[in-house]
Length: 151
Image (cartoon, rainbow, N blue to C red; front, side, top):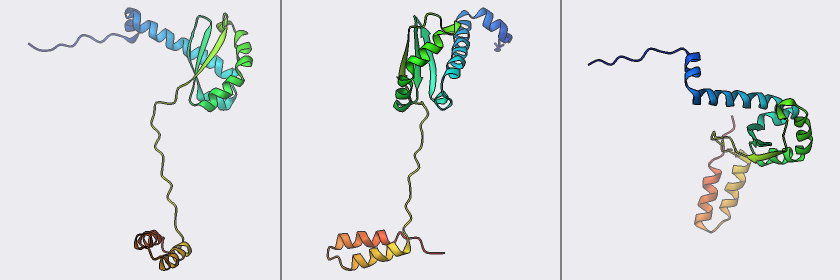
């Protein structure tokens, strides 16, 4: 017995036949249009931090990347509500809800490395000479040895 794959269907046929897929595509396109309209009303710096999550039953849900942008949007909420209510796509808009949802991608923080000058290393060496505690003296010597030589 050999495996014979089903014949490929055209994307338009898939969308026409698969009702859940069509509904999901329609919803994504609708949210894209609403996002464009909201972006027109927002200040340029806020656009990348604000996403339209849903619009139903008179409530527009906006997601922001952090608390700073949520606060800024809260201050602009009344103005934004008035401007959006004037658009035909937002007829029946009663309120705007703002929630914080941080980006799902992990950001890697680069650790800062402090460079120790030769003058600082010399100062640490001289300080270590006057210390009687052997552990503290050794720690100061280790720290002084991290100095980069002058080139």
